[in-house]
Length: 441
Image (cartoon, rainbow, N blue to C red; front, side):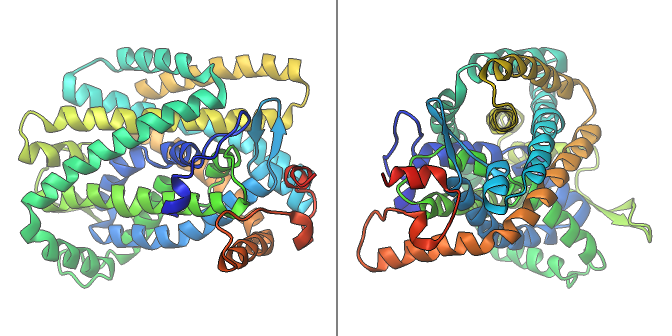
């Protein structure tokens, strides 16, 4: 995975593996890694983190399959590669109406339902740290997006390539400092996570269902594995074999959950900056079990955790980190929706008109997200995740045999000593992989 990640191959039509990885990471690493982790701990206890790890290992497999399929059935449009679930549903399953349904759901979800979660988080953290009115933050975010989204996938890939390593590296560095300061608590915290995951801890006993539910829920939201978003970025990469980008995208799930989410969780658990709610028979939160910081809701857990060690610095640092995390995710959402508009609308002139209308609606959605409540934003975002995930998971289950053929072909050629294997779908009896068939000529 690491070897492929830094391969330099790209062309006028495609972006490099690292750029595609960065674009996918920009979608995976967002508010779910900061606020989503805090929410999972708030409702499910520390054990929710264990179930986030579990979903990461399962999710890496689905990420490999969907990214490989995205590469396999991609097509060249103008001077860019396009691909994603709608493309592999039509070409792989031969069910065009189902592909159209996914494309429509993606436009609605990525274009209207999901961006508000990210922009709301940016506005909330900016207000907590600097008392900046949410409407001002919304206008600033929209202005920056205008500069980027009108530049196409190349500009999105370039921005992601430089911003993602900076944002993730800076955030992880801060968490490593806090972990180093609390190294003596590491065994205790990991024991707490494992015990809480199975209700073996006295404080968090009886909430195993909530731990699993919120760990899985926020784990999927965070890493987006199986949701059908990352294949759009994977398809844009220039590689010599589809399995290569599948491996790169599987690695991005590990980066998202095992590194970034775990770092956030450890920061919160080390410093005790969290509350966990008890639930009644109906599954509704009632009283607080742990009340270490009752005047801060879960949206402020991470800021409070950093401020615990660096007073006066934590709020601002997390606000800036969250801006980069969430802003790059918004960029990725735009690309996903735009790709599916391209899939549905074949006429170039019509597509341009619809594209301009969509950009205006998208920018309004981002702004509107900054001024609505966090609970509303997350509820709407969860609907978007569910709509895309269920539709895509059915498709990748049906197409998993084809993805495994591609994997076995790559693995066999690597064992034969071929450093950079080529791919010919005809050798495997795979049909409708037009780009790769034409690439052999």
